[in-house]
Every structure is written in C-alpha cells, then in structure tokens.
Figure 1 (tube, protein in one colour):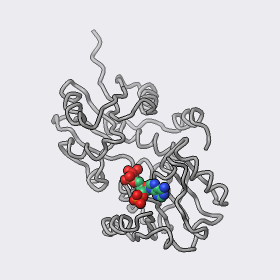
Figure 2: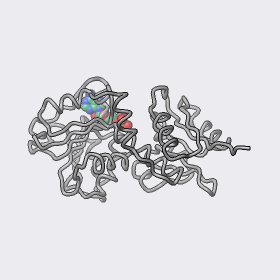
Figure 3: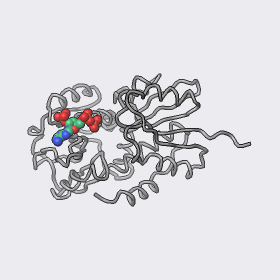
Figure 4: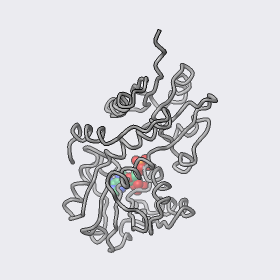
Length: 279
Ligand code: ATR
C-alpha cells in the first residue's frame, strides 16, 4: 500500500494563471518528493475558514498570494521575524507540533535573485525603491540586512514613503520622498515595487536617477513588468530585469521550509522565461 501524498497548494483570488503549481511540480520531480500541489481560488470572505479546512483535512503547506497576504498574518498561529517585519505572509507551513507557521519568503527570494543569479552587489550601494505599498514593505528587511549605503523609498504619496522609511530606520539608512525629490545622482539599483505598470504607467523618476551603470529590477514579470523594463532599457541603464527569478526563488524558499530541501532554481527560471518571454 502506498503512503498518502502530502498536500500543498496556493490560495489566491484570482489564481487560475498562477505559475506556482508548475514551479512546485517541477521542484517535487527534481528532488523526488512525494507531494501534490494545487491552485485554489478562495474569495476573501472565506479565506480563514478555508485555511482551517485545508490544514484540518491533512494539508501540509500553502502559498498565499493576492489578495490574502495580509489576512494570512492573522490566520497563522506563529510568525517568523521576517513575516512580522513584512506584515504579510506568503507561506503557511504545518509544523511538527501542529502549529501553523506564517513566513514571508518574498524578500529572501528577491535577494537570492539579485545576489546569486544576477550577481548584483547591494552592500554599500545606493538603492532606490519605487512604491511604498505592501510589495515594498515585504522586501525591505532582507535588503537592508545586506547593508546598502542608503535605500531611498520614493512614492506618489510621499507620506507613505516617509512612514515606511521611518518604520525600517532601525535596520539601516532609509529615506522616504516623493518622486520629485529623488535627486539627480544615479542609483546603483532601482527596484520597481509600484503597481503602476498594471495600467502601463511609469513612475515619474527624475532622469538623472538612472545612469549607464544603473541596474533596474521590476518585482513583477510578464506584461505587468513590460512598461517599466522597456522604459529602463530605453533610458540607457546597464540592465533591466523582470521579476521571474524572484518568483522562482521565493517558491524555492517556501519549498525548503516545507520539505527541508532546497531545489535547484536555474532550470525552472529558464523554463518560465520560455513561457513568459522577454519583456
Ligand atoms: P502592493 O501590495 O502591490 O504594493 P499597494 O499597497 O496598493 O499594492 O501599493 C501600490 C503602490 O504602487 C503604491 O506605492 C502606489 O502609490 P500610492 O501609495 O501613491 O498609491 C503605487 N502606484 C500605483 N499606481 C501608480 C501610478 N500610476 N504611478 C505611481 N505609483 C503608483
């Protein structure tokens, strides 16, 4: 008799186009793990009941995607420090003591992609982060842990950038500004964490903030990253990258939390690039 397969999945709304089942299926085959992984479309009002049902029914772990990442903070019974800092959860894991742990692997996934895959140096470098919403909050702590010279957070609503910079000031040098006050000195790395691309918009960054050595990175991928990546390329930066690597790396961090083994990510990133195409 074969043992029951451990069940995993992703809760989102909508979730039909999620790459997570493809990524985790790939990881499971590559590492020989006996597990299943499905996408579940879960409406906000049923989120907490569905999480309880999933784990009550023997489920082992979940990825949490939009719009549930903040609600999952309350649903988790325990939080990792990085999830508490992010004030958002993208991974739930049933631990041996039956406690559901909430973690956030987004920031670690970004740092892995930047440092290991793209070989970008963060330490002592000047960083500009565009946007002051949940996506920015989710990645600030792991970035500041690498001790950049400064992280300037620029936002359409300057007060949100100022508040976020103040909230993370104990972790490193941060500054919150409106786009008009970003300055004219080129940054080493510009990270787009706004949702402006969804409507094809580019945040109004002063031209001097981007130079020939600047690397530009969009946390989004595919069509959602297109406007920013194209703008960055045309503006003459060194390199402009969409966030596919981050997507795969955050998944690998979740997989390691669940299964105790970190899968290789390069083959999955290559396979996804084929699917999504360059932007
Ligand atoms: P997320 O969780 O994706 O960060 P969010 O919390 O709604 O979502 O934040 C969206 C971010 O994109 C915000 O920083 C928002 O700026 P405001 O705080 O001023 O709203 C930014 N954003 C959205 N559309 C934008 C646009 N067209 N131009 C510039 N910034 C935009």
